[in-house]
Length: 305
Image 1 (cartoon, rainbow, N blue to C red):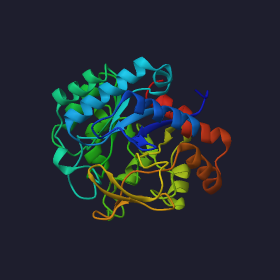
Image 2: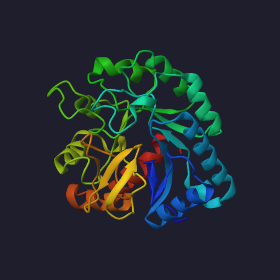
Image 3: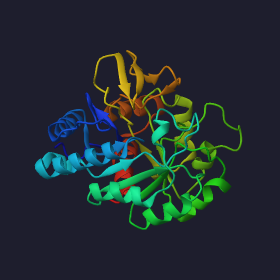
């Protein structure tokens, strides 16, 4: 493995391998590790969107087995990120997650995932406004799991306070996973930018956020709270064309944009971390030390590495 490569906390799949569909193999997991390493990402969290719990459990077990079988996988795979299913089912917030698998806070279901992971679920994304969520956050945060807030309809400090007080430590891909139209003053973006208790994860691929938003993040938020993620989906590294992602039709454009025409929303990303770091250097003017902070040091610190 390349030492000191980029660290990516949100990888749904890569180079034709989808962590979220049935039939995942240990060999396929290793192929993702090798390809990510070749593209500059040395450590990452395999990420699971909202889906059939049986598929999630089986695929987590497969990845755990790959970590035991291959030294490369053990070094590269730092744990797991559950982006669902404890999110909002509302349009705009749910994004491309399959609505039928969205679930209310459920410690027993989380326990199934954590047991399959042998304790390696490192991050869980939740929607703060769902009834019972603060108690859920408190319970899993007490286990050392990083709770991140996203794919939600909560907007204001008052709505988010209970989960932040319960131990939530991050915001998931800020600026995405929210409705296109939001209150001009009382919204999740402004709240997250000034919330010192939680890190801001963001996707700097040139599609998820305009350059003005990226510049705003770096001017408004202390560097130590910023974490770049790829949110890579399995068409990353594949040719433009039609794909099925998260159980729905998606289109990969020649410029790397991956979107769902039916819902008119993005479906994750296809840009590797190294290319995103180059974009941040070119368009935002980040120095090598700043790039290392948002692309390696801060992600590791967030999950306690």
